[in-house]
Amino acid sequence: MIIWFIFGFIWVSRANLVNSDNQLHVFTVATEETDGYLRTTRSLRQFALNYSVLGLNTPWYGGDVKNTVGGGQKVRLLRDALTEFKHDGNAIILFIDGYDVIINANAEIILERFYKSGANVLFSAEGFCWPDNSLAVEYPAVKSGKRYLNSGAFIGYAPDIYKIITERPLKDEDDDQLYYTHIFLDPVLREKHKIKLDSTSAIFQNLHGAVDDVDLDFSPSGHRMRQVRLANLAYGTEPVIIHGNGKSKMHLNYLGNYIGNWWNPIDGCVACNEDLIQLNWDSENDFPFVVLACFINSGTPFLDKYFESILRLDYPKSRIGIVIFNRVEPHAVKVEHFVNLMDGEYHFVQADSAISLTERNARDRAVDICLESGYL
Image 1 (spheres, rainbow, N blue to C red):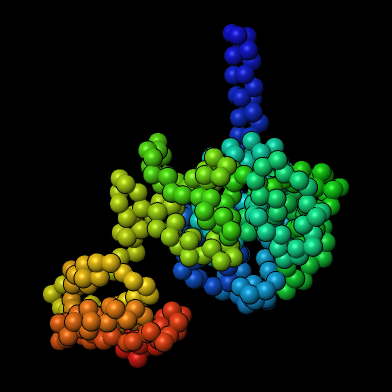
Image 2: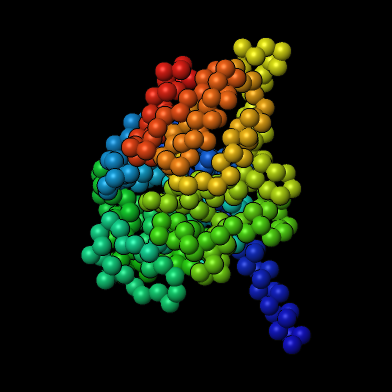
């Protein structure tokens, strides 16, 4: 027993020594600074990760990736960026999509889990074979977890990744995920570069089709920046790179209220104290005019309490406009009462009947009201 313990100790120390010179470089692609982009880059800074943004403030030629295939431009930009690393065996590259990813760990944790995978290149995995479902039969079987490659997040040694992204020609409008899928499904290339999928979400969590697999974990943590973590209940793992792919972006917004050190039980809302605007409380006219749009889309208990919370907002009422979109007929009386009660208290208070509108139409109408009010 004593001999085994000493041997195990030496093996772990040697593994750490071998990897001690490795450096993690994060790359992402974003052509414009959206709210999603700002959230992604904020999470990178929270964990002091070394990152580069490719393509910022340049035209996007990669197609309409929200609705169809595309994204080949991301591969081209990454090819150019990795030229300097193509022979650097100590460089480890982490690529993430630029608009819908949140990081929740530092480089040490990410690298430790990558080493444990035994891969040279590790792609995130999902439950859908996209964009070509006919390729599903060609995928290797997995013992547990998700079977199909997702290119929204992957990690690997720089020389291997560079060879993968320069293996075949690719146009900007071609699909990046399909490109990586063909590479992975080639048995020779898969073995040559030791490409694996993170099927049980040890590092990566793709949310599309898997929102019921995960939940927030508020249990105590020794890392102040990681007081809130994401637990994958299906596989007993704790993914640290969360990707709101496909139709899961609303759920990513929910998780983003906590992970990435947005909020923690020690400091409360960390992000709420960032990028603050200093206002002159002696002059209400110096306060920016804001429009508060309220959407009542389904039966809502304690609606009175909701209206009371609006009244408690610590902001000059003369600089607030309120518009309420109500799609629930039984709530019409309470909405009308609130509007009549607050008439004259705020810059304006109005209720727009949204019963005949879809939620999307109501939100578009709210933007129109903002424009008409000089908010933007």
